[in-house]
Picture (cartoon, rainbow, N blue to C red):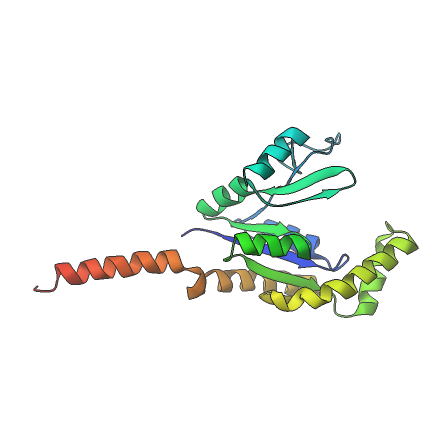
Length: 211
């Protein structure tokens, strides 16, 4: 059976990246979608591991040929999700995880209607603030901007299939895992399999009609 594509969004500081790393460690059916980017490769990075590093010309060609599920610009560089990588992994039976913000998620959902949509939130706004401060990587202005962004993103959550409250990491990881495994087998997402099964049943009925 083919795999699935799961889009994981969430507030900055909600812990979605940590959840996905845990999924990759616990279950061998998952693979993380790798984006392509035009920014320079850093010393510790490898092509095809953190990103696919390509030129702007290559990136523009991919956009023109509809080879990206979504794409955006950030700090003078381009980022996008390669369609072929995702589709190849799904064909191999892998459950692909794509961490992306809400605007990109909407684009992916439009192109991939069967995508499973999960949104990760903290147990409260106070906990979110504490996590952002505790990371020690953001200025006060950056934290204010992230909290403001969260207040806007919350209006998009109803478009998702599932809401995961990341209060306990182990519980949140298992909730995401169970959601993916349940949603991917929903009849509405198994239309190709059902068509094949219906065709085979019709064929059997014709062959055994007078048996």
